[in-house]
Amino acid sequence: MHSIQNEAGFVQLINDNKGIIIKICNAYCQNKNDREDLAQEMIYQLWRSGKQYNPEQRFSTWMYRVALNVAISFYRKRKKDIDVIALDENKPELENVADSVTDTEENLTRLQTCIHELKELERAIMILYLESNSYREIAEITGISETNVATRISRIKEKIKEKISDKT
Amino acid sequence: MEDLELKNIWLAYGKQLADAEILNRQSWALNLRCFESIQQQKAATKLDSLSKFKTGAVILGAVWVLFLLFLVWGNQFENPFFSVSVGFIALFSVYAIVVYIQHILLIRNIRYDGNIIDTQKELSRLQSSTINSTRILWLQMPFYSTFFWHSKWILSMGLKFWLIPFPVSLLFTLFAIYLYKNITLKNINKPWIRAFMMSGPEYKNVIESAAFLQEIEEFRKDLV
Image (cartoon, rainbow over all chains, first blue to last red; front, side, top):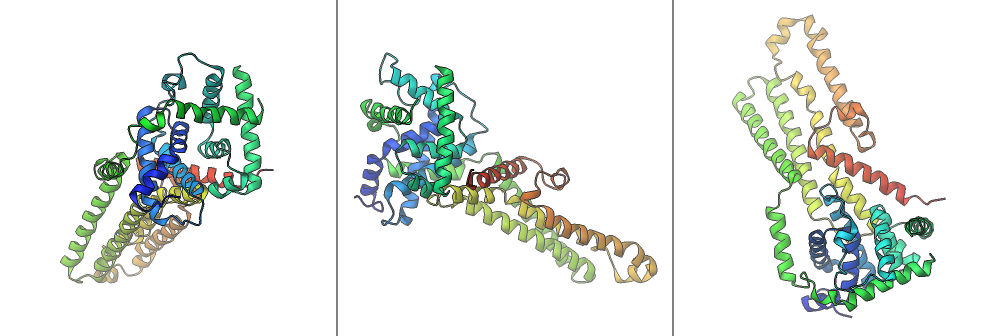
């Protein structure tokens, strides 16, 4: 485990967890420039908050907290200015993946559209769920009870499934 | 679509990101010093409409207080009613400005490593804190009805003083206390409260933050 307090350790930890940052940025921003701004702000806040990081705490839990808090605040600040851009016009960071549109890609686009339509707090819960965090971890990161997490996830999933089936 | 399918799509997403080597070619990848400097520059130069409003309010408030202190100093306690009233108006203004600056600083230095609900609640509470400065400012209202009082004037008015100016000031005092108690986030959507709030981007921010606070409270409640 690298130390978050020294620069090299921090850079390594961010490198190891860049996927989380990109996925959260994609979930909260549809515009490429906004995504880059958000990523910068997230890394800056992680670096700033690193001094208060308690090594007894799981790094991922701490990172999700900071990253999602920054993303929600950023989204709320920018919400007024962001025009709704169709996802197809601004596909999040997958431009070079494949030339042909595969089923998985199509499903992913649908899933992302559904996630974008969720309220910011529900969006956080869904990302945490899809990232395979346990209900206990999600409760710890969000600050709501495990029962609440379970009920909310089940409702969000229903909503997403309905939307995806409607579109197929 | 089953649960597993949803998770599989998400997993495939992670794999696609890795395969495309996006994770290794991000333009923002890991130049900490550069990030620090960009963020500091942003903080120093990027004045959005809200920041401009806040800075403007603090500057205007400071000029206003200086003007009031100049008046008190010029009066040299010749008329105690004037000095005390204007002194109190200045005091409330200073207090409101201090609360305002304190909240701006707290917003800028908020810690993001708390749980999402508590952090967002604190952030929204601070963003809506203009309401506190506004309600404090209303407390100075009674002094606007007493600064022109003068002992000679009171004596010359006799009974009339106790029938007109005094009850008016008393009413102002009661109304100010009433507003102080009632201008709260809970009452923000009542039209009569809106009438006593400031307008502009700051007010919009208060309304939006209050709505988000309400959303957070709803979110925290266990669903049945």
